[in-house]
Image (cartoon, rainbow, N blue to C red; front, top):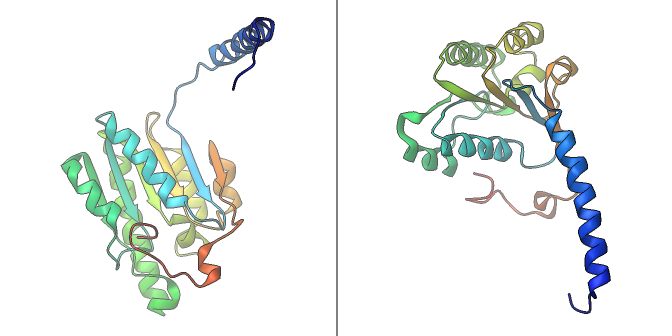
Length: 204
Protein backbone atom coordinates (compact mmCIF):
# COMPACT_ATOMS: atom_id res chain seq x y z
CA UNK A 1 0.00 0.00 0.00
CA UNK A 2 1.39 3.42 -0.93
CA UNK A 3 0.51 7.07 -0.24
CA UNK A 4 0.52 6.87 3.59
CA UNK A 5 1.73 10.15 5.03
CA UNK A 6 3.56 10.56 8.34
CA UNK A 7 0.49 11.72 10.29
CA UNK A 8 -1.48 8.64 9.19
CA UNK A 9 1.43 6.40 10.12
CA UNK A 10 1.66 8.03 13.55
CA UNK A 11 -2.07 7.61 14.18
CA UNK A 12 -1.74 3.95 13.27
CA UNK A 13 1.23 3.49 15.64
CA UNK A 14 -0.69 5.14 18.49
CA UNK A 15 -3.78 3.02 17.82
CA UNK A 16 -1.76 -0.20 17.75
CA UNK A 17 0.12 0.77 20.93
CA UNK A 18 -3.21 1.14 22.75
CA UNK A 19 -4.44 -2.13 21.33
CA UNK A 20 -1.25 -3.90 22.41
CA UNK A 21 -1.60 -2.55 25.95
CA UNK A 22 -5.16 -3.90 26.18
CA UNK A 23 -4.11 -7.24 24.71
CA UNK A 24 -1.11 -7.58 27.03
CA UNK A 25 -3.27 -6.78 30.07
CA UNK A 26 -5.82 -9.41 29.06
CA UNK A 27 -3.16 -12.07 28.48
CA UNK A 28 -1.56 -11.27 31.85
CA UNK A 29 -4.85 -12.12 33.57
CA UNK A 30 -4.77 -15.69 32.23
CA UNK A 31 -2.79 -17.58 34.86
CA UNK A 32 -4.31 -21.08 34.85
CA UNK A 33 -2.38 -23.90 33.19
CA UNK A 34 -4.20 -27.23 32.92
CA UNK A 35 -4.90 -30.16 30.70
CA UNK A 36 -7.80 -29.37 28.39
CA UNK A 37 -10.76 -31.44 27.27
CA UNK A 38 -11.30 -30.41 23.64
CA UNK A 39 -14.25 -31.44 21.48
CA UNK A 40 -14.23 -31.11 17.68
CA UNK A 41 -17.75 -31.73 16.40
CA UNK A 42 -20.27 -30.57 13.81
CA UNK A 43 -21.26 -31.64 10.27
CA UNK A 44 -18.29 -30.02 8.52
CA UNK A 45 -15.06 -31.61 7.37
CA UNK A 46 -11.87 -31.24 9.42
CA UNK A 47 -12.54 -32.53 12.93
CA UNK A 48 -9.95 -35.30 12.90
CA UNK A 49 -7.61 -33.21 10.74
CA UNK A 50 -7.60 -30.48 13.40
CA UNK A 51 -6.94 -33.02 16.15
CA UNK A 52 -3.95 -34.39 14.26
CA UNK A 53 -2.67 -30.85 13.80
CA UNK A 54 -2.56 -30.56 17.59
CA UNK A 55 -0.86 -33.95 17.77
CA UNK A 56 1.82 -32.78 15.37
CA UNK A 57 2.33 -29.60 17.40
CA UNK A 58 2.75 -31.61 20.61
CA UNK A 59 5.14 -34.03 18.92
CA UNK A 60 7.17 -31.07 17.73
CA UNK A 61 7.84 -30.19 21.36
CA UNK A 62 9.08 -33.70 22.05
CA UNK A 63 5.97 -34.75 23.97
CA UNK A 64 4.25 -38.13 23.67
CA UNK A 65 0.86 -38.51 22.01
CA UNK A 66 -1.70 -41.30 22.04
CA UNK A 67 -4.38 -41.94 19.41
CA UNK A 68 -7.35 -44.27 19.82
CA UNK A 69 -9.72 -44.59 16.87
CA UNK A 70 -13.20 -45.82 17.76
CA UNK A 71 -14.94 -46.32 14.42
CA UNK A 72 -12.16 -46.13 11.87
CA UNK A 73 -9.85 -49.03 11.59
CA UNK A 74 -10.25 -50.93 8.36
CA UNK A 75 -8.83 -48.41 5.91
CA UNK A 76 -5.33 -47.13 5.29
CA UNK A 77 -4.56 -43.47 5.99
CA UNK A 78 -1.65 -41.22 5.13
CA UNK A 79 -1.55 -39.60 8.56
CA UNK A 80 -0.95 -42.94 10.28
CA UNK A 81 2.00 -43.57 7.96
CA UNK A 82 3.36 -40.07 8.51
CA UNK A 83 3.23 -40.38 12.28
CA UNK A 84 5.33 -43.57 12.12
CA UNK A 85 8.34 -41.28 11.68
CA UNK A 86 7.99 -40.31 15.36
CA UNK A 87 8.55 -43.87 16.56
CA UNK A 88 7.38 -44.59 20.10
CA UNK A 89 6.81 -40.89 20.72
CA UNK A 90 3.33 -41.66 19.33
CA UNK A 91 1.17 -44.70 20.11
CA UNK A 92 -1.72 -45.43 17.76
CA UNK A 93 -4.59 -47.87 18.15
CA UNK A 94 -7.18 -48.24 15.37
CA UNK A 95 -9.80 -50.28 17.16
CA UNK A 96 -12.94 -49.61 15.16
CA UNK A 97 -14.80 -52.12 13.04
CA UNK A 98 -16.12 -49.60 10.55
CA UNK A 99 -19.36 -47.66 10.56
CA UNK A 100 -22.49 -49.37 11.85
CA UNK A 101 -24.00 -49.66 8.37
CA UNK A 102 -20.89 -51.59 7.33
CA UNK A 103 -20.67 -54.02 10.24
CA UNK A 104 -24.44 -54.51 10.63
CA UNK A 105 -23.63 -56.19 13.95
CA UNK A 106 -24.56 -54.25 17.09
CA UNK A 107 -22.87 -56.63 19.54
CA UNK A 108 -19.65 -56.46 17.57
CA UNK A 109 -19.79 -52.65 17.45
CA UNK A 110 -20.34 -52.40 21.19
CA UNK A 111 -17.54 -54.87 21.92
CA UNK A 112 -15.14 -52.89 19.73
CA UNK A 113 -16.04 -49.64 21.49
CA UNK A 114 -15.60 -51.23 24.91
CA UNK A 115 -12.19 -52.58 23.93
CA UNK A 116 -11.17 -49.15 22.65
CA UNK A 117 -12.30 -47.53 25.90
CA UNK A 118 -10.17 -49.95 27.91
CA UNK A 119 -7.20 -48.77 25.85
CA UNK A 120 -8.18 -45.13 26.51
CA UNK A 121 -8.14 -45.68 30.27
CA UNK A 122 -4.78 -47.42 29.97
CA UNK A 123 -3.28 -44.47 28.07
CA UNK A 124 -4.84 -41.92 30.41
CA UNK A 125 -2.99 -43.62 33.26
CA UNK A 126 0.35 -43.35 31.43
CA UNK A 127 2.11 -40.22 32.78
CA UNK A 128 4.30 -39.99 29.66
CA UNK A 129 1.29 -39.18 27.43
CA UNK A 130 0.70 -35.42 27.06
CA UNK A 131 -2.11 -35.49 24.46
CA UNK A 132 -4.70 -38.16 23.78
CA UNK A 133 -6.78 -38.08 20.59
CA UNK A 134 -10.05 -40.01 20.83
CA UNK A 135 -11.04 -40.12 17.20
CA UNK A 136 -14.76 -40.61 16.46
CA UNK A 137 -15.59 -41.22 20.12
CA UNK A 138 -18.62 -38.99 19.54
CA UNK A 139 -19.97 -41.53 17.06
CA UNK A 140 -19.63 -44.36 19.56
CA UNK A 141 -21.45 -42.22 22.13
CA UNK A 142 -24.15 -41.19 19.67
CA UNK A 143 -25.09 -44.85 19.08
CA UNK A 144 -24.83 -45.64 22.82
CA UNK A 145 -22.01 -48.12 22.37
CA UNK A 146 -20.58 -46.60 25.55
CA UNK A 147 -22.31 -45.05 28.55
CA UNK A 148 -22.03 -41.26 28.30
CA UNK A 149 -22.02 -40.70 32.08
CA UNK A 150 -19.19 -43.15 32.56
CA UNK A 151 -17.15 -41.59 29.75
CA UNK A 152 -17.64 -38.02 30.99
CA UNK A 153 -16.76 -39.00 34.56
CA UNK A 154 -13.51 -40.61 33.46
CA UNK A 155 -12.57 -37.71 31.17
CA UNK A 156 -13.30 -35.14 33.88
CA UNK A 157 -11.16 -37.15 36.28
CA UNK A 158 -8.11 -37.12 34.00
CA UNK A 159 -4.83 -36.00 35.52
CA UNK A 160 -4.21 -32.26 35.60
CA UNK A 161 -1.63 -32.13 32.82
CA UNK A 162 -3.32 -34.38 30.25
CA UNK A 163 -4.94 -32.86 27.15
CA UNK A 164 -7.70 -34.92 25.50
CA UNK A 165 -9.25 -34.24 22.08
CA UNK A 166 -12.54 -35.92 21.15
CA UNK A 167 -13.72 -35.89 17.54
CA UNK A 168 -16.89 -36.81 15.68
CA UNK A 169 -20.28 -35.41 14.75
CA UNK A 170 -23.18 -34.98 17.15
CA UNK A 171 -21.28 -34.53 20.40
CA UNK A 172 -23.63 -35.18 23.31
CA UNK A 173 -24.51 -32.21 25.53
CA UNK A 174 -23.01 -33.84 28.63
CA UNK A 175 -19.64 -33.99 26.88
CA UNK A 176 -19.71 -30.46 25.51
CA UNK A 177 -20.70 -29.15 28.95
CA UNK A 178 -17.71 -30.90 30.51
CA UNK A 179 -15.29 -29.68 27.83
CA UNK A 180 -12.97 -26.69 28.09
CA UNK A 181 -13.02 -26.01 24.35
CA UNK A 182 -15.70 -26.97 21.83
CA UNK A 183 -15.39 -26.25 18.11
CA UNK A 184 -18.38 -26.76 15.84
CA UNK A 185 -17.23 -27.41 12.27
CA UNK A 186 -19.80 -26.03 9.84
CA UNK A 187 -20.70 -27.54 6.48
CA UNK A 188 -20.89 -24.44 4.29
CA UNK A 189 -19.87 -26.36 1.18
CA UNK A 190 -18.54 -29.88 0.56
CA UNK A 191 -17.20 -31.37 -2.65
CA UNK A 192 -18.89 -34.72 -1.88
CA UNK A 193 -22.26 -33.10 -2.63
CA UNK A 194 -21.00 -32.34 -6.13
CA UNK A 195 -20.12 -35.97 -6.77
CA UNK A 196 -16.42 -35.77 -5.90
CA UNK A 197 -15.23 -39.00 -4.29
CA UNK A 198 -12.96 -39.33 -1.25
CA UNK A 199 -9.40 -38.72 -2.42
CA UNK A 200 -5.98 -39.77 -1.20
CA UNK A 201 -4.28 -37.04 0.80
CA UNK A 202 -7.55 -35.21 1.42
CA UNK A 203 -9.91 -37.67 3.10
CA UNK A 204 -7.45 -40.44 3.94
